[in-house]
Amino acid sequence: MLMEEDMDEKTHMLQESLDFQAKEKSFYDAIGEKYPPSPQSESAFFSRNSESPDHNPYINPHTSSSSSSDGIIQGRNQDSTYNVDKLSHDTYNESRSVWNFKKGVEEAIEPELSSCKRNHQNLETYMEEERSSKLPASHTDIDTLVEEFDAILLNSMGEGRKKFGAYRTDLKNAMSQKKGASGKKGCNKKQNRKKEVIDLRTLLINCAQAVAADDCRNANELIKQIRKHSSPCGDGTQRLAHYFADALEARSAGRGSQIYKSLVNKRTTAADYLKAYYTSLASAPFKKISNLATIQTIINKTKNATKIHIIDFGILYGFQWPTLIQRIAKREGGPPKVKITGIDFPQPGFRPSERVEDTGRRLGRYAEKFNVPFEYNAIAQKWETIKIDGLKIEDDEFVAVTCLYRSKNLTDETVVTHSSRTAVLNLIRKINPDIFIHGVVNGTYSAPFFVTRFREVLYHFSALFDMLEANVPRETPERMLIEREIFAREAFNVIACEGWERVERPETYKQWQVRNMRSGFYKYPLIGDCKRGNGEGDSIFS
Image (cartoon, rainbow, N blue to C red; front, top):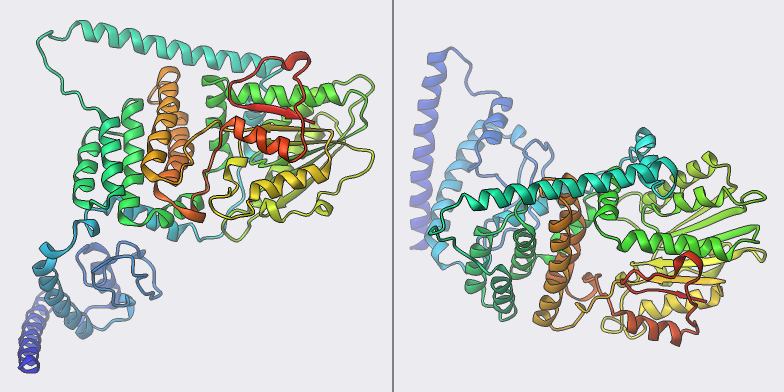
């Protein structure tokens, strides 16, 4: 019986296909064109029709090669996609008929699908970015922005310091004008007008509890409510809620690791990151004081050294070191030789060490500008696998090891018994540096229990978003980049990822002090111009 019904359905499909083909032929005869149409016209139709049988939101519609769906769409048709440019017209008609039949079946069973597998359209854009991120990485545009980089990076002396002060003044004036305008606007409002007040933080906590309990229906309803009252362009709380809702939705859908990989693969140019870095320096004192304390301590300890070797764990773009090169060039008797070993995690793509190498080229240009003998050694690998021989340490060098706010990305004992943190600290102990400067993020959002961790990360990033809300205008592009590419990405990893994929694992400064002491380091007091602390857990060990 089932086979007979299936044959009847196929007969009706074939008849509909023939009727459609006859009508289409008469239409082409009327307009004087040859039938069947060319493959190019079929391809154009497919690219315009978002409801076509082979439509897949994860496949580039202009791609000519065929590929199979990766099982990303759950509970949907997972037949392999095909090249529309090579299909004949008869195949197209048959495929369309089969697609119409399958679409009817899907619409019939749609009410039975779980709410956990629906309402995730906004997450699909992340997966498209992951596909496009597999292209070869291009070179950065640093050389075309030399003057802009100089004005931003050399901000502690001379003309750069004046420009930095002027930029801070501009931000303060913009915020003062905004507050004055909002005050006048508030006075003109009717007193009896009621405004709906939504506690987004409470909604976020309730949503996290629903996600932890695997209550998908309640979680989705709360996410919809949060999205209704949040925006990436609103105030600080609305922006935080927008990005946290993305992370909660990804965790609820079980796509946290996939989406985070696409976020990591999405390259931010050094020029854009530099502008955001400059804005963060002007709006908050944390990084600026950390950089100045690090630089001044190294200068004070190396007054008589002829060779300085700085080993920077987590060098990133090395934005703090041009100021050191500029200052050390003014030393009486001539500058010493400066060697910097830049260490960072390998980047995804075809060139895992590209960013570290680009950093060395930039620093080399500054050393040439200020006539400082310079050598650079780039290392892009897992920190716990680094051997002391690869650091190229010489006997007559003053060795300074720095690690500013990147040790939180090392695995701890909750992931593996022999953690990377212990291995890296033991490596630094074997280096036996003249000084070890360690800056840590004083965070408590690394608990193994999700709800507890969510509460802590919410409190932590609420303070950061509120800080930007108080100091940087909302429409500033650099503020949006800081929130989206730095704050939101870190929070997403803490909320949506688990196990090895959760790489944001901060500890308190007291916990790091215990680790450092256990590895054989002792605290060294700040001296000279570095006596003031920065409140972010900077410690100098020797």
